[in-house]
Amino acid sequence: MATGRTHRPATRSRGIPEATVARLPLYLRALTALSERSVPTVSSEELAAAAGVNSAKLRKDFSYLGSYGTRGVGYDVEYLVYQISRELGLTQDWPVVIVGIGNLGAALANYGGFASRGFRVAALIDADPAMAGKPVAGIPVQHTDDLEKIIEDNGVSIGVIATPAGAAQQVCDRLVAAGVTSILNFAPTVLNVPEGVDVRKVDLSIELQILAFHEQRKAGEEAASTDGTGPVTAVRGESGDKGPDGDVPAVMPA
Amino acid sequence: MATGRTHRPATRSRGIPEATVARLPLYLRALTALSERSVPTVSSEELAAAAGVNSAKLRKDFSYLGSYGTRGVGYDVEYLVYQISRELGLTQDWPVVIVGIGNLGAALANYGGFASRGFRVAALIDADPAMAGKPVAGIPVQHTDDLEKIIEDNGVSIGVIATPAGAAQQVCDRLVAAGVTSILNFAPTVLNVPEGVDVRKVDLSIELQILAFHEQRKAGEEAASTDGTGPVTAVRGESGDKGPDGDVPAVMPA
DNA sequence: CCATCTTTGTGCACGCGTTCACAAAGACAT
DNA sequence: ATGTCTTTGTGAACGCGTGCACAAAGATGG
Image (cartoon, rainbow over all chains, first blue to last red; front, side, top):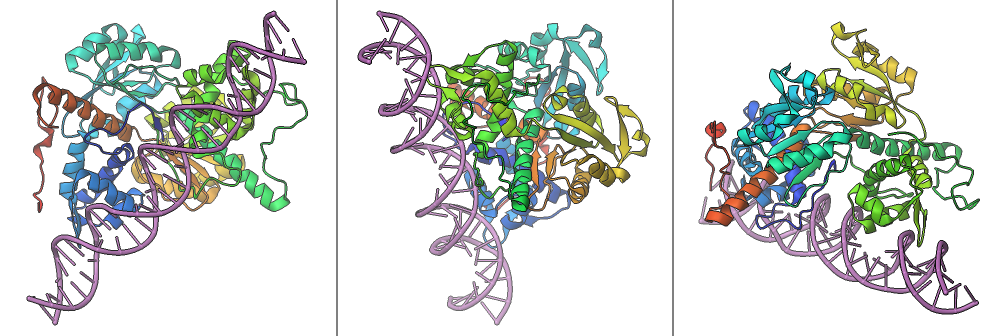
């Protein structure tokens, strides 16, 4: 999972499993596509295929929302779009601020997917005074000094952090202090937040490293099947217990 | 989170749990920071705190790699950095291509985190002929026509898709046909890939929607605790409370 | 009205991941 | 050596998520 971690003690009273919540946007996207093609109803099988999940899982997911399907027919597309949108809170307007307008921040500001579903980029904030006033994606960049005022004036509760790692925690603290309770973090750092604040992390480097792991494993298996040389059986050589076991640590900077 | 997955039947013979693999980069980052500060050893408790996880979980994760700690002391930082790097396959060079050099693609090309750990941007590819030859992040953009040749010449096995949704599947098919077996997908689409190809998805819009869900829930609970109103639409919008839900629902059989 | 067919909704079992709690292992002091 | 103290490594319990398989519900046709 990409990953987002927050301690949620348990699924609350209104209990929709976290895993289900994470899939709702996926269903919504598939349903929206169907809606645009004016498809009236869809079966769990079809929709599951479009969303790339198991149909039983999809039905169970929907069962948490209520019984919105009709047996023998399927689900009403428009109705389901509305129900999921409402459940996700997309029927209301969510002002969002993006902090850190570098390459990534600018890309995010320009990203169409943001505005599409109730999310509105309320402000762009950067620490560089030279950026102040400069328009990015049609929105003038404001200076970090005004962060608290911006949050308050716009009633922002969702913040996106796209700053360098070093500044992330500080920005996070200020956002939280100003009233932000949900943060999408692109900086490669673990953010510390008080109880009640949700943080989701998007880390490009981590995703690549996970792919590299599988890639290596695939290469190892392939080699093993062709020349018999076993994969890197991670058996630590007994030749020397501690550091100096011949292997030189390939230290690489972050 | 960056979420995304591919069907992995089960953890293979040399089985390191998928959840553990996903955390290794996290540990690695924390360890690298310690290494730079010349900290010689670290306890599971300290490292877990730095990585934002439970210490028992961390110890169990490491136990899958082998017994690299010393009881009563902790883990040797340098040694662990090396072991994890090797396990993740970061001791080798991974050429990567980025397809789709729009705002996001350019941001990725400029992202420092890529080059830092064995990942090397081997090429930038875009379908727009006007982009061809134009340097982005110091690398000249090449045209999609040469995709197959680029993949082959550079021995690329990891591809990053940052194209619009409409082009993603087609690009994916070509990448796979050319030999790419791991894909990091930023396009908001479900990619269909043959067995043996790993896909990880990073979807900004989905992350925001998940945050919105929790945000709404928090607002609902708050409201409920004060006036007992159910999970109605939140009350936060003060100004500009336009009605995005003007388009409503088709009615439905109760 | 009854039979048949389709598709939902869900009970159930299973496996993975998380966490607790503790014995084993080593460091260190005496 | 011996005892104490620290910290790892892991057995076991538990909870969540997944997927199967099927009964119930409704549509459809005769």
